[in-house]
Picture 1: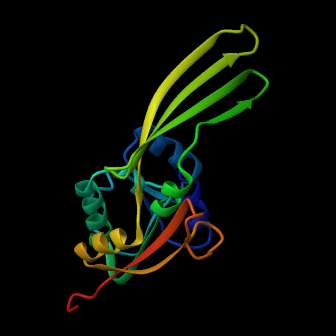
Picture 2: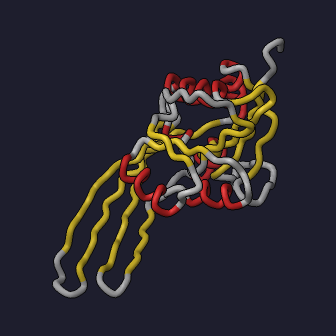
Length: 205
């Protein structure tokens, strides 16, 4: 819903967001009138603008599960960066995924009217470098006891630093930094989420 775009805009930055969901765009426009939101797909959108930074949070890159999808998204980022500009994003980190291995998880939430129970059951495909996270979500109305159930699968690709470097070079960018999500520590096999920073090379490089 554009929360982080709104926070960046409030700090004085000029922010343009790209979102492919019409519902999310509508919600973001209501909450963050100072942010320009454009309908588009991160793999294909082309704006008539250049930026100092392209930012992609919450593992959007990990949702690009094929090499073609990753290449297209990196090309999109590079196409919208000024020379020397940075592409910042976070991904699931391969060493940690393979060492820890995803486990089933249960999360429960409730308010005065309803209770939500979400069960996540992951399956790792070691040959494709992705994890299928199968969600089963049950919503219970407290007053009537009526239940609704939803099932969905999120396929998440995990990445390794040399792999990110290879994709970056193919899109005329260079890998300049990687750190553990939020605390800036050096990535390790204990680091599930890692933030990478790529820099667009100058035309003559």
